[in-house]
Image (cartoon, rainbow, N blue to C red):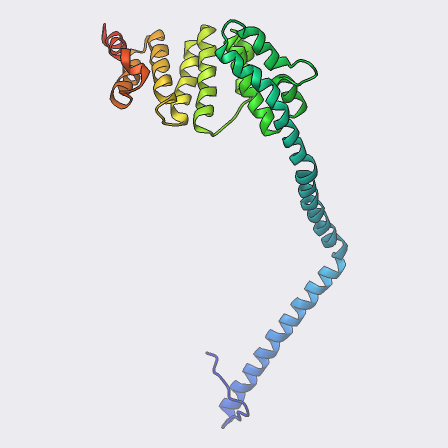
Length: 255
């Protein structure tokens, strides 16, 4: 076991002298090993200096490039795309409330007019921006309301959002499109995703109801009953709850 030696220590006998010499030798070996290791490290660094500097340079260029891209390319692109959304969004909003000219308004929203971009132009020209992502949602919903279900699916599948209402509406819109195409199994899957996306008083009862109807269409009355009863128990004030007893009766019949 190593012992601490005070400054000026002198061995009292041969045993202590031998122990002292051994410790001195061990200490010298340790420092010699450290020196050799440091020398080898310095030698390696010296030989590979260009390589090391090259790696550091690549990392620095990458970081600076990302910052420059974000500042001088992506930010202006995001701003321009957001400005372009104003024109088609006006027509989309008008189409929602004006059923008489709905298709023509949706077409203007999709394709633009008078030199202004529509949603489809924004998706093509500003790919990767938040505005283009939102344009996918709006385009999908426009096609859904125009009864162009395959186009609706294409654009809604390209939209992604963690936002509570919008994310659920997009998944529910996909369910509606598949239901209209006569694919209730696919529709049910998307309605269930819409329900799971976020629990709230607007989209949750809406898509629980649609999931129940799709389940009835597939002959799965147990699943349909589960969804209908959840509306009755958890969303008493919702529009869907007003007629839910009739659907609960349908789900229970013949069981």
